[in-house]
Image (cartoon, rainbow, N blue to C red):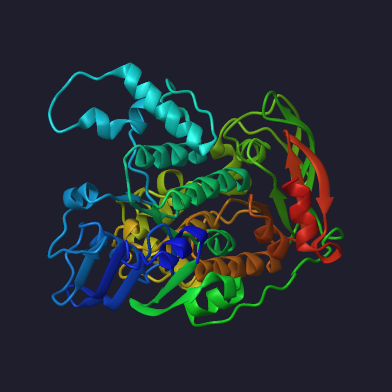
Length: 508
């Protein structure tokens, strides 16, 4: 229990900020929640943990009035019993939510997005831009970050957009805040800033329910954790007595081995050879070789130039100088289409908008890059060829779906990421670039994804794994390149260094 919650209990303030009991929810014939309870104390940072599909989001939507629970639920806010909740009444009671999928306005400015609730108001009124900017400035200062208030949101990075979403929620006078994967797109330093804000809110008596797949930060920031699995509550546990491996076991019902898989692949055939690559303001003097069957991890803090380098290797941007050779042949990509034809595949960190077409069917997303390969003699898409290709990758990657015709948005984060992999593996690449492939993917699904990555490497595929989470590259790469300020500054071999040593170097 954290200090604020302990102090409240010591003072006799035992009335929970939130108490929901006997909560069940069915959608048609599917039971999403079965007799679940959740209690959060005043000033407590409480974690809600579970794999995708465990019922976390459904429970949050019931608490915030988006869904109505099945009969029999008991609901108390701040000691007051409630019979029914709507999103409006929940907000009026001081309940606020930061959803995983950002509800922002790309064509509006940073200040307008942050102060949107005040701008909207209960009735039409003039927008007080000075007051709006002052409010946005104050909230940004609380997060310890600086953003251009006049910048259009569409120009911001994923991490910056996440910060804007958090700021907009903090503008209100919330007494209980749900944070659903707020750090999924944040770097280590940005995450630390957010966790500091959460600690301050807790000290001020604000309760926070924190949802995250990053178990280390869960154990760091929360005092207790409620674990859900398959729509049922497994239990409530003090985080002081919890480990990441034990929490993983409770969430999944399975155990996972964290073993170093690093191998020396320097004798294998070079697939990618980069020499002296540079792009002004993004990266400089990049020398890189990736061999057949090798997984090279690329890590570093925000601004290191990792994604920028990956985009140039994929033909999305052109380097100012330097050479790129693929299987010994010099290449100069004019676009990503050239890179795809040459045998390079790129899995973006933003699968929601760049990796997949969310409203479109699963099958259509898989075949999108290879439409030319599945046409018949009349240049029309062959239904048989399409079905064969789709079924092959769904089976090969063990994707859990209803029907290939279902919208890809109906899948969990882990299964969506497998569809992205299948989409690019269908192009039969020689080099696979994975840019933060586990953003928003739970711990069980992560293990499955990296098992696929290792299998692909064993089959000879060269892989560049980009991630700001050092444990990901440490346990899944053959060697690790540390990038900072647009340059490669060090190379680490997992089998020769401890995880702590690598983290200390990267986060210094």
